[in-house]
Length: 227
Image 1 (tube, rainbow, N blue to C red):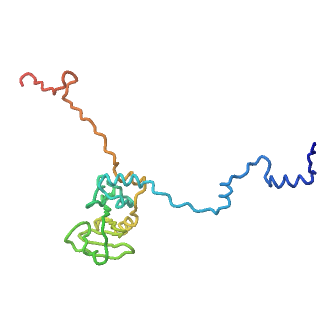
Image 2 (image 1 turned 90 degrees about the vertical axis):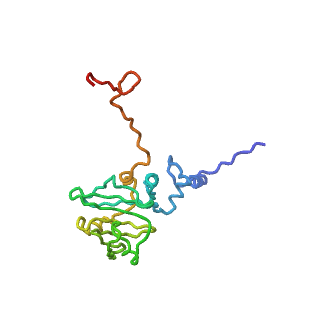
Image 3 (image 1 turned 120 degrees about the horizontal axis):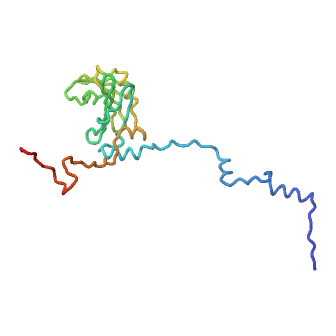
């Protein structure tokens, strides 16, 4: 027996086609599930980026014998880092000195483990000058300290103290305070300028000027006539 296919009327077929296709335009690709999900999800703020200098800072500091968390850098108008001054302080602390190009005044940054309080501040000498009288004055979250012809700003941090000091007559208190408040952990570019590379410098062969270019290479001990 032959069955005849039933043909739906055009008026009934048209609504069905519109329902299946939706309201998209011809030729436009359907949105993916991930795109639809992101479009419906609320926008979220991106978290802080990781410090790009962390890995390099750690390797360079450890090569020097300095604890990476004790490495700080600062800045002051007219002062330039004295690269040869960068080194270890105590067991694993850090110190560096900046020099004023015009007056040759020195600005020293020192970071070491420990703490400083109202009770211990007078007992800690300024600029490692033991036996000298030290005065302490609270200045915000820092201590302003004077003694032995030097003055210093000491900023207590978690487990360590950041100190910026100079000779009292060479660096005004305002400059010293600004440099202390500007002290911070270095980023990648500052790390590159502040700390020497962890890779040892390649050895440069020493050329002997008295070795002849022929024979067995023994030194030329030739004596002229008359000795």
